[in-house]
Length: 296
Image (cartoon, rainbow, N blue to C red; front, top):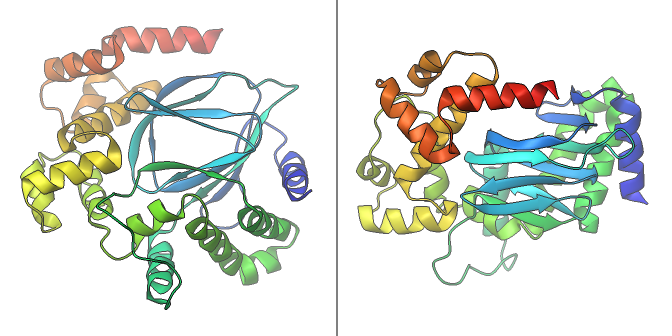
């Protein structure tokens, strides 16, 4: 019943394809009525909840499919390919995008870790996963509905919006993606801090040693923990972030040379080689294929 009400709110609020700001910072509703081929993207920390249709995100060859039964939780900036193959006017893709405020989540995660007996310390040496799927439990569903029910009143949004958003964060931290989220935002969130450091310096030459030094680890330990969290080595991650960011700029109309420079490549030929190695096409070939898809 709650999910049906959430779907009705989205249907009533979004009449055309695209993202619509809900009125609370970081919260957007969306509708898609045409199939979207998987394409390079960069997911920032967010939660994406689908109430109709399904979407796919691919990270280093691993597919994460989410729909009205599972929401996606991204705890770190991640280079992915994302799309929705089945959207149509009769069965549109409908959902909610919530950008995660890392400061608030860190405060909540630390509060939860400090609460006596709230959670047992994690066993072993597992790392937070950059992407996780979580079932729509009652706590998350009810918190999301309570947030969206504020939409009819700007006063309610202004007064209650932050507290309702905090409820959603709390539900996420307690849900199936909670262990990964608490590791990413709570005490000892070294890999998340390293990713935040490097993702803000994509135009610079950042080495694995420098990343490890930022979080007080040896190169070997950092490399192992980083790969556990992201499925990629630190160098692979940096390359994927740069190339995905460049691909998004090219898709938006920027020329290849400018896109390469804006993500830190001084050599266009090196950029083209690495782009083709990742996507199977040169930047110009890829641009042509994307345009032809958009014309269909």
